[in-house]
Length: 609
Image 1 (spheres, helix red, strand yellow):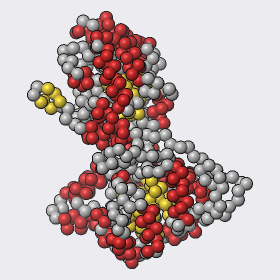
Image 2: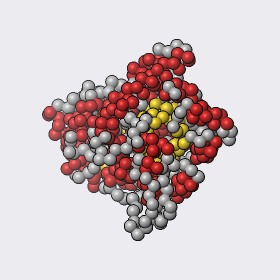
Image 3: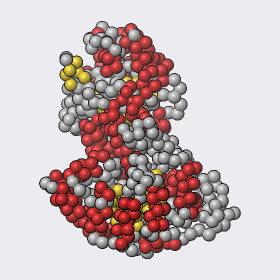
């Protein structure tokens, strides 16, 4: 297999879940040395490893968290440290086969609330050296230093592993205050580990559960350029008849696993309380995400032997002509219906056309929901009303051949404005067995459209006449990993993007920071700002917590929370949206206003049309 660090750069990896939880569930009491079960009950450990592999884990950890001389001493097993660690790797490797990585789990030598005195450093370093040498001798793919609270000890373990030329993941545990048990802030831990040459990957594990890790990630993820791995426990345990039980469901764990991937982490797994059931559901969900799948590689094509008349951008559509001439444009987003009756959708479109709206945005399976074909909806709008659609087209549901056929067919039928997006993964719950295709992401599909505009299909075969697709792409000014978002934005431009539409903007300063950065590119494209008029505090919370890429500032949430009636919430939401439009108007080329709950009158009220 490829080295794990190379694989992680290509796509995020799914780690396994808890070992101790599974051992306890099999009836092994906590006064047993769980690490020694590698020697005393190898079948049990092997079975747990196999269950995680079958659940879909890309990486499994050895049963060696406490297998250092210091932690084994109270059990009278200090002299067995080497044997336990070597046997643990053999068991994991046998279960992993040729397609799953084996990571060595290494925990601290001191208690969580201890400060390591200088006189103990040599003993601790010796214990780490002995354990890591045994693990390295059996050929582990990665060392996972996990659940550390003392920065000095964690860095000592990392340096010891580095001397053995092992890749190192340095992970620590936080409390509800965002600190380790000895009071070190998460920011301090990340900054120190990011500058430590002995550390390849940084991470957070265990702690207060997925929600606690999510809160910490928003603070620390922008502070490091190293790959990040999160392995939260299943939430805080509860005392049930004398047993500490984790009540967090696999569904809850999985929703956060998807959020972590969307934020830009390169590895997700579980700690205390997580089981193969958690990993199985997470695997099914996150392996459908575009950032996890390996995409088909595409390249720009412009062969000289095939001369075609390329359609100039300003002649591709009325929207293109107006946008590229510097005029402000206005569009309203209308979601296709869940039924085959298009009459109500057309009524709304006619209202927008009558108000002077330039285009109608048609989402493609928003939130991974099943609705009438957005292409059919767009063609019907064009034929029945005459207003130009902007067809959102996502990479989730079709393979590359099908997507190319849709672009060709849609353009031949009269559709010119396409907004190319990667798309949400299939939503768990409504369609639990549906998977995403994601042959390419938005960058790749933009290249496909650009090639068609130059007169070539994905295989380099000539297309004559070429298409004249006006290529739009999405942008997220509030991305947690802004550097990655800007890099992708520039790559979309290089692939052939001609305009962009942002996620709904609530934080105007975040939009300005984004624009300041992207306007430095040697090729600038018009940016249309997304605007969402809120209708209630519940709507504001949903947008902030559940819609990837959307951030609703605290002051907006507080203002919506003060609304006492539905009418007041509706009125305040429009007022907030209008103020956002006024503030950002000098910096953007137009607005795409959503119609919340299908109410186009609200969208038109924001645009004052």
